Length: 588
Image 1 (cartoon, one colour):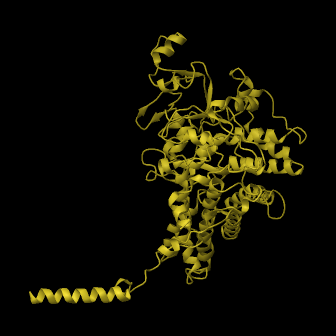
Image 2 (image 1 turned 120 degrees about the vertical axis):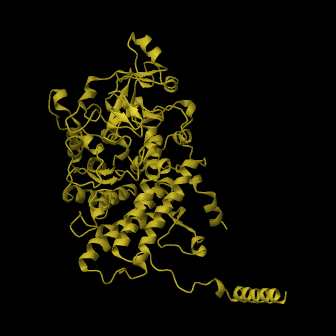
């Protein structure tokens, strides 16, 4: 008994002594850096990419693109609920607290946090994390990795800014404080809770600063001596940083001048070594593990998915299924087998679709007549109708797909069309012209044509398709718009490059006729953007806002009670989707 009392007394003495001076809880040896070699530091470089692009239904990049599609004025919402807040986003309910938008906030700060953890190796060593590395290794790997980390931090902050901050450059918007500025890794609760927001202007200044430094550190292309995984266009190079900086400057309405969107675009277009692919389909048929410029000269920056480990059964960018014809496990663009069996030669229409191109937009694009019929001239555009220009591609077809309507089941379809042979019981009719699905029969009339995006899950194994994020065609259209707006001659030449590439001279029976500056209007450039980038435009809303354009109703009806997005865009951003926990700490 005495021994037990003595033991308790000793423990209590130790406990209270330790609590008194806190030495009991102190680490006797500081944690080591997780990056013990340049090879180790490569893991820091890839982590922000993974956090931004991967994640299935919750992946940041594809969720952000989906929101841009939903809010736009050239897509139409069917009204069906498929596990996403499409109705609130479609109606632009910026005053609402929308969970699917709110989720982007924390995930984007995760990307920033991962970038900052890698950058900590540079911040704490005066930019020399490996002083004994060779000069060649420092230039090709150490400096490059820092450039990639800065690029991804800027990339994440830009996505935060265009979603959660007021539109840059209007009134006092730049002074509005919304986002927290994190430029170093956080290792204590005190630092983590120090989340006083800074002005929108300061956030954009950080984005520009990061991208300018990234440009100075990143190589133009892969060379021998760099880590082998960098031999891929899914990793940022100097030209990706410059192209993205042009996008940021455009958003900031810095269209011309020494530090402007036009200066960056001119540099990439003239010196980057990129060129338009002869066939636009090439940009959506890539599943290379190492995406090399030799295989695609147009895409400057890709989202990487061509890995069985990252996408073991279905594609990781699942949100594209809300507006894309093919299913997320399609093969050969839905024209071959799915992961669960075989499908007919025409399609494997999938039942997650919520959005199609708006009819009024299709009329303006020249891909639909006012009565819903299909103009023969629409087939002259290889984006809309591509019978296949290369035997290397399986079941090519266009980057968009027209259905003539929908039927509830095969029997009703057969009866309406007088077809005796039994057709496929679900998905679409055997000739590929009609959707046969009871859900869509309630959303689409029997003879109501719809045109869907058909860009994704197109490769031999659709779950492994790499997705373009920045490509040269967009840069030409951006430059065309800047030149037109600034009155700098030559905007028609940039417009013509994109339109001519899409022109099928064989079906048209004549070559493309170049348009002049006097013929090409701002609206024509915008509509050409719809044709080229529908379903992939990652900053359509910001693009229009920077130009002061009205983002109208599209095919929305009065019942939707949706306001147009118009300058000065007051309160037209997701200001109420900041997580409540963040707000509570800011107001503590």
